[in-house]
Amino acid sequence: MGDSGRGAQAGETLQAGAEREILEETGIVIRAGEPVFTCDSFERDGAGRIRFHYVIVDMTADYLSGDVKGSDDALEARWVSPAELRGLPVTKTTLKLLQQIGFFRLSTTKSVRQESNHIPSELVVIKAL
Image 1 (tube, rainbow, N blue to C red):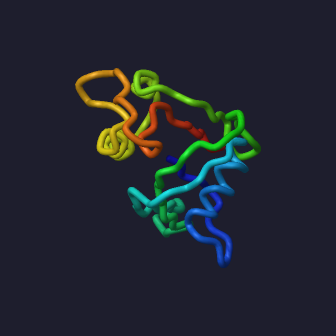
Image 2 (cartoon, one colour):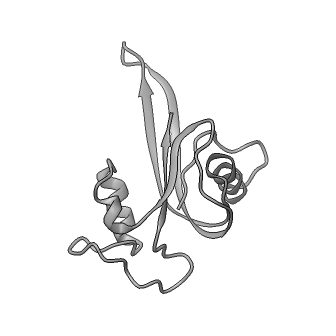
């Protein structure tokens, strides 16, 4: 799954935007699939006024090629296993989504057997600047 930061360009599909952003931010080539989760995120100023409104779309994706690395707007990008994910600062919403798509089970830290290319056994983590 990927969720990227700059947004879609005019005339760009969600899939094409995700593929471009993941390549720019992590150095890997993916084939983006269907959206699996969407949410809104608001950044407010000191007075509580909305400065930015982000629409976050998480999508399935197939890894095609490349070596994972951070770029200019990502402090770190790397593959993590379900066991490693538990030690990272991840939102409850993200954990719930990853559990729903079969990335891990809440009662175990073992990987779920991969039934298709859309159920990851590893995940790219991006820490934005």
